[in-house]
Image 1 (tube, rainbow, N blue to C red):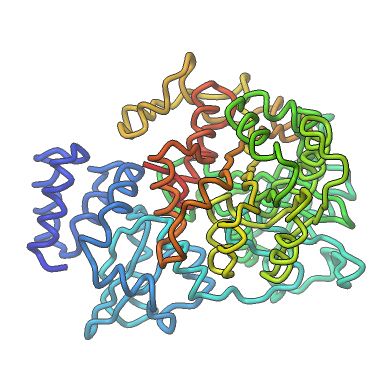
Image 2: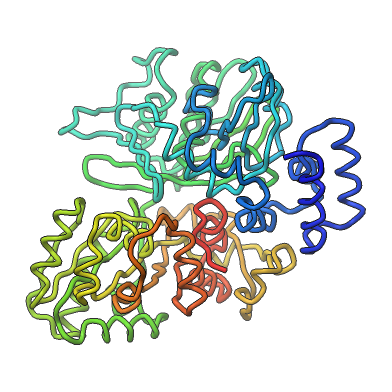
Length: 530
């Protein structure tokens, strides 16, 4: 973009109420001194809140920068940055103009990063603020992760660190047997295994001047210590940041994320909290069992009368295919088993065909054929119902959908419940006015700080959140088009279809779930709806 286009963006932000006129003038003056783009300067100076700017850019990005939006969608410069660095800092090199590198980023909070990249690439970096969901899509498509033994990275859902798996030959090594050249993930695997051996539920990794102090804490208040070489700090912090999807920088303190640990078939949640210190970030890991309070799907759907009724209507003929869409780490198998029980109890489906997971178009086609005269239910590892529908359309399965053989797609996610002991109120309606209509509740929205009740009890309390896309809605769609599921989701939401984001925000407004969970859907996955 030229200066005229950058001023146009500033004017649009003023007109939309996201930026004050005086703040824009300050940013323009800074732009004249330092160069760069107006969006980056506004964020760097703290003159615009990231959330509203992301929503604005998601809607207008292709109009403001059509050439760069096309590059982001079809072919960024993957040769200019290592994939691991691009994923960690959530940035995508778009174009090289002579000695200038146009770089899509999500934040302006770390000015030292730009100078480090200029030294690495020997180019002048021109950072462009871009919605996180668009950067995530580009990273998934063009920047392949380096394969690491026992590390399962998922585009959506929880990443997994395998501690031990006999079938794959993965076992944690003793800490004293590791070399400083081993990867941060290998060291992390051994640290967590040591914690389990010591019956510790909390690990504190604190960098000191000459070493890393590791404290293994038990619920009884006992603590045992050991040290690791100081040189490991960067590798372990990088592994934790990538696994837990914590923002590598930002104004939110403390930063928090989570991932899954798999230990001989058993799964634990690892909640990671990072706090800045003089010698680098200290990291606290809480090892927790995930727990769903509701005993069955009927109880889970008590707060969703509309979805329950739509589900029963869709299944009244006792034939067709019903899909359950949930990403990795969201207890799809458990919910699928509950769904089968629900079908038998509430819908009179005595003997439905059950497929734990559909992976290929051929498997889906066979299920559609079998569901011509009986009910079939299957799990599918997709982000939500809309992504599942797009996959069906791209797999040339519109004919059986048009023939009425799709009962519908039930999308499910598990979000952390709000903790009444440590939650703090967030005034999101003031910061993000466009969400005000979703935040009308008796108590407002809250985020958990983390306390002995919700972190020290050894369990992470999860709340199921659902969306349902009826087969009748899917049947009315036009033939497959290049339209992204994000756009289809927005269109159907405007037509009245409830999305995971809208139902999750309703739960947050009711004080039931940590509001950061649905906001992650909105900002980082682009799964909101207008």
